[in-house]
Amino acid sequence: MSADNRVAANSPAGSIYDLGYRHYEGKRRGHWFAAWSLYVDSLRGIWGFGRPMSAKAAPFILAGLYALPAVVVLAFSSTISKSIATGETNPLDLPNYANYFGGIGTFIVLFLVAQAPEVVCRDQRYQVLPLYFTRAMGRFDYAMARLLSLVTALFLVLMVPMIALFIGDILMSADAFKAIGNELPKALPTIPSNLLIAASMASIALALSSYSPRRAYAAVGLLAYFLLVEFVPLVIYGIGHEAGAKWVDYLPLITPNTGLSRANDWFFGAPIPSDFSSSVGAGAYVLAGFVSTLLFTGILVWRYRRIAA
Amino acid sequence: MTLIETRSLTKDYGQVKALDRLDLGVEPGIIGLVGANGAGKSTLLKILLGLIPPTAGSASVLGLDVVGEADEIRKVVGYMPEHDCLPPDVGATEFVTHMARISGLPRTAARERTAEVLRHVGLYEERYRQIGGYSTGMKQRVKLAQALAHDPKLLLLDEPTNGLDPTGRDEMLDLIKRTGTEFGISVVVASHLLGEIEQVCTYLLAIDAGHLLQSAPISTFTQRTAVLAVEVEEGADRLAAALAGLGFKARQDEACVLLALDDESLYDAVRDTVAELGLPLVRIQQERRRLEEIFRDDAPAAGGVQ
Image 1: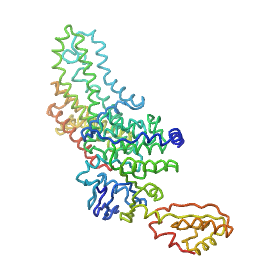
Image 2 (image 1 turned 90 degrees about the horizontal axis):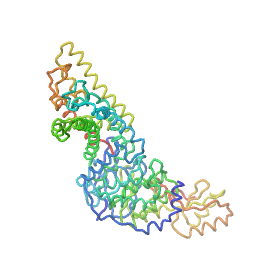
Image 3 (image 1 turned 120 degrees about the vertical axis):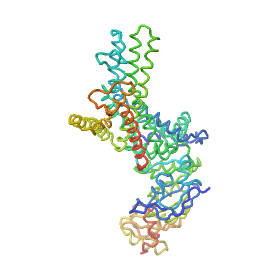
Image 4 (image 1 turned 90 degrees about the vertical axis):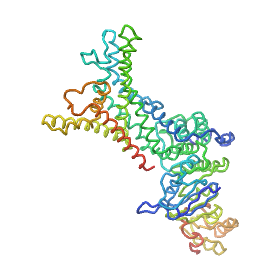
């Protein structure tokens, strides 16, 4: 309390209140503005802006690690005289638009494990929710603003290496303008495919995180989900496939990383790898990604509809 | 306009009835809402804010229905919860600005209002430090500031003096009083301490177990609750008897004599009687009666004159 007393002594009450209290006569915006404000604040929070330096470490390091292979390709692009990003003349299976997420999507999981709890757990742990829900903000607005901020952040993480690959291909070509014209149509599918990845992964991570006020528990829960739902279906699929069972063909649809990698293949017209049954087409994985996004968004909205404030 | 109106408002939590057919009608002012823990104060506030729906009955705030027009109510109401509600790793300025924007204020206006309300609640250079390092008193100020940030017409404060030391409590009560009287913002203060409430309120609502116990201007309560405690090292029984003999309502409580303070002449009578009896006087103090004693019948009077 010493601080309070010091303040009171330094600044006698009279001089403070003599400034007078002015009522606010200006504009009052509605819930869309409130949701937009929360979205912006949330996006800043994911990257640790407005927070201590230590809060910036995890998101930037993990995003950097995800972009690293593309940056390496970019660095060596001048020594390679072939287009790498499109994967057309890519005998070494170097990183390209289509195989990038499938190759190191694990870093996306780690990014979510580190940052998704940050988005929703704080408000429950520190009981800030009543302050939001007694303002111009609905529960649906809250859930969607938080979700969209994570989708946006994840989309940025996913797109940085895509842009690096694109620049690499342009740099190694003799005629830059012609190269852009050639390359752009092949690069454009990265936008819808990575949007689907971002929406699907972010909705899973946020819906699960919203059930724990503790960041650590949420992180462990996310890691467990992404590992178990990834590998258990794949193991069962592997065993069942050998044994000739047909129903196991559908199991990879529910895996987050593998499933979204196959969906990614669809966007680039890449063939399904030979170790996956061709009876489930790449289009089915795209559909599975949409269904998963809707399902977990629903769980998130339902959670905030019911949560006590 | 009527500030708050409820018609047989009921909130049933299954086993517990937090509010039981509550009928209220309150005019603008500083309204004290007193009741023991669990009496239904917080439940009433949360229903008025639209945070929880009533089981039955209806309620309106500033003429707006709490179920149908909750969005409109939230624009003109500020709420300070009883519990902690501040994230520790942001500064007060950043937090209050954020909350002002969530209330619909554009960025510049939110910044200006934040500076103004933080000054109003008495937070200065420390407002840029992280809230986690604040004392309880400073945290309570930030909680009040976020409730004031969007210049509401009505403030709902749930136990605003919780955890404050006597100085901090007086400063908080002073702030509430200024907010209510100088700025024309109506305030509802929920508290279990009647002594605090009667210092600042113009109107008192007492609820117990979800029922309305009292609803009246504060003056009618203060008369009943003002008590003079006279502590002596010995002879409290003789003092009580002597004062009772003079026609005052007196009750002995161990080394203290409690007197109903309804007449200024009591002070003189106490001074003279103590002197006459030659008693070693320890203190004479005007006490604020705790709420439980209101719920009993007129404690000092019925407490048995010796």
